[in-house]
Image 1 (cartoon, rainbow, N blue to C red):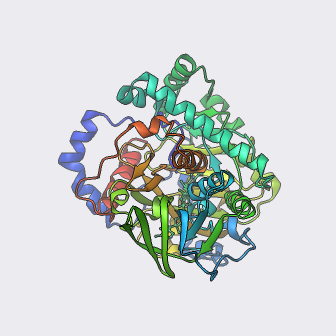
Image 2 (tube, rainbow, N blue to C red):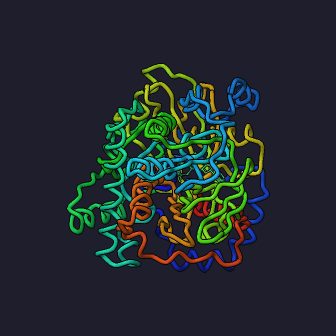
Image 3 (cartoon, rainbow, N blue to C red):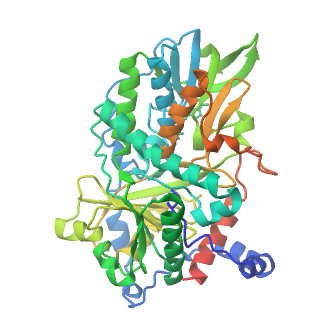
Length: 487
Ligand SMILES: Cc1cc2nc3c(=O)[nH]c(=O)nc-3n(C[C@H](O)[C@H](O)[C@H](O)COP(=O)(O)OP(=O)(O)OC[C@H]3O[C@@H](n4cnc5c(N)ncnc54)[C@H](O)[C@@H]3O)c2cc1C
């Protein structure tokens, strides 16, 4: 999950880059193999330095943990889409049953197109069913940085489309009467360092001037109105962003697609795509399907079935934990205004209350991600306690992870190549953006063109990369280290 405005954390100056090249690489490699976490919890008041829980206590608080997404216990799609007879041919074959695939299938079917969805997993159960449920306005890049790179006009278009994307989610929720707790509670990016707040103030001024869009600053004096933690030094709030229950949202979209007549199949893996007499021949784990067009909605799960797309995006694991049900007097003050929150670190945390307000759901990227899930949950809990030490005595009930998908410039990609219509690389903003691009893919196939500023960039392959992100461990350690030294 990337931050909304990325106002503070984008500031890597020249000297930092120089030090990295000369001195930090060996240190990072050493830390990468070290046992201890390099984010040392520390706040101005010394509260966090008092956290010294015995290993036994920690383990007892993880004793009943379920390695399943809180959102999918139970799975909100009651219907079974496995083992149905596959069609021999279809107008459009949608690969992937997340927001991208399902929204595009629904829109195409409504326009009278014959559509089939296949997914290699249980329907809607990957990232779209287990994310943080934050439908964010904004991009993974600050307005300031984006304007420098793309110019003012294009950046304004990007941002306005991100606002539209949240509206798209709201419209679909209303249209399908989807009970997924959608609410415009606003998104807060919390300042990890005091000078990140300066960057946030500059962003606020830019948003007002260039976009006529109001975002609010939370000063250090007022931070406790928004969060029951001493970890942060202020914040910025974007009020149009929303929270929802992601698994109920995708389950609702799948129900809508099903009712509209989309042919849906789960546990069917697309393994090969070939051109055949102007059509596409897709070999799946259960047989061959001939399609006129393909929608590729595989995002962080993209493989060499579509090598061109695979070389342009990087899958990154994101991990979440959910606490046990907390007493109201503990839960509500954690996030009194029920915001969706992430912070301005490079290696950011993101967190929110569950829709019933009883649990804290906390996400990020644990160090040493090759370790077993339970060890990662332990790391994640430590990160959670660095923000909320008051939760030390409460258990963790759930832990899970999924794949987010990044592009080198942190902007999603959308387009068509050889009959494959693709959209991916949402950089942690896919709840709203994948929904929006689902509409855009359908428009493109229906011959209405591709009316989005995001299609005007040419997605470039990542050098020396064949789908295995070998560079991530060192990059992770480097960014965690920078967060540590810059605290
Ligand atoms: C833990 C976590 C937290 C997140 N939090 C947020 C958040 O709070 N806000 C936000 O905006 N974004 C968040 N994201 C990102 C967001 O969930 C994604 O951007 C979004 O769900 C992407 O939707 P999608 O439909 O493109 O892909 P996905 O939902 O990932 O679906 C892709 C599907 O393609 C299928 N597939 C892949 N290859 C094949 C194949 N060969 N054959 C058949 N099927 C295939 C997969 O099984 C999968 O079901 C989070 C992600 C994770 C993992």
